[in-house]
Length: 475
Picture 1 (spheres, rainbow, N blue to C red):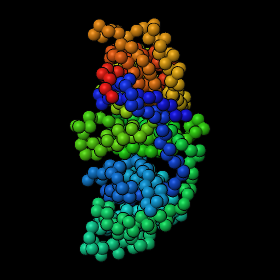
Picture 2 (cartoon, rainbow, N blue to C red; picture 1 turned 60 degrees about the vertical axis):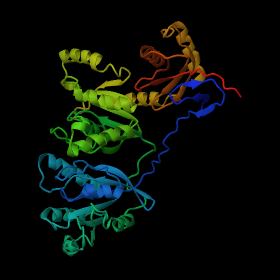
Picture 3 (cartoon, one colour; picture 1 turned 45 degrees about the horizontal axis):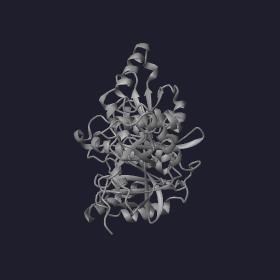
Picture 4 (cartoon, one colour; picture 1 turned 180 degrees about the vertical axis):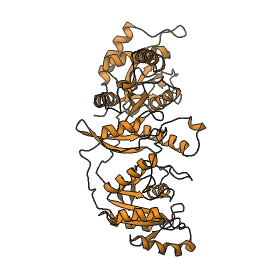
């Protein structure tokens, strides 16, 4: 049901009781996003052959982090693409090497999982360098696969490199498709071939529809990827004790509580965006975009260490974006009694901006209490979506103001004439008054609003529109 009220706004945020009313539609529209399952295209190859550049070219925007050093991409990262009116997912992967050790071994495992689950595969080879031993090892694996494989010869910037492409027939994957991911040369013809290779529907459909979007955020090495892997029961993200392993946001559908959720594992923020450079700069922008695209964020804080400036910076990013919030104190298995007392003091001191946030103590490593995240997410999202009927809101507000009037300003007592909820996601309220309301009184009203209508887990925004007195115009 659309809820309306009538008023006339001045450009300075005031309102008038004159004639010539403007009708303002306050219905909160949903994004109406379609969640029909679509096929997936995996882009694989050895490090630094231009996979992420090609992914950006396919999706038509700069999403995948690109830098002129090998090994920037580490996880399998999904992006939505559209070509000739047909939607599909593109999965960027880290460089695949057959004899990788340590962190690179985890990266290679993610690429292998992408190859196993995709509906079609692009194997990207550097046409300038030619087929290497690593390319031959990847091709050997893909020749045994039942999934359609397209061989892409990248970095063919002009006709002089075309003669080198023919040598790639030796990989046994059919005709090499010459492209220049940097300049876009040949990518249109390649995408036509991709559509021909992709099935109409994916091998594995997503159960249900409309998964809620959750961003996993926090400083580096706090356990975001470990938590995603624990929730999914699968290695969706590369986990390593090197801080900053995740660079791109990793998008995963996870079934929890019998429902699908779309989780995004983001890069840990270690510096201010203005001080970051290279891949770290772009990763920070991707993290901010992931928060803005999410409905609710899970902020992971290392409970075994003091709350840091980085934690508070990420917290501010979520609060400024107006997203629902769950704070997960991770590594709780490492917290003793003394640390718990100290943490209570830190919460009272440092998290004063978000006393409304849901809090859960977990251990991503052992799985302790991770099941409590779903009820916390449900509560936060219910609050984020909540709408209060205008009549009930004004009846409640009249009682609160009668019991505790606003402070006088300039010798006059401001009156609240009317209130309405202007939107949800987050809940936003507008008060129409005869005078300015002090910030302290607005905080008082927010606190009472939360107590009465239960907005746990969601920010609440209150704005004031002050009536502007105008002399009636002669007609």
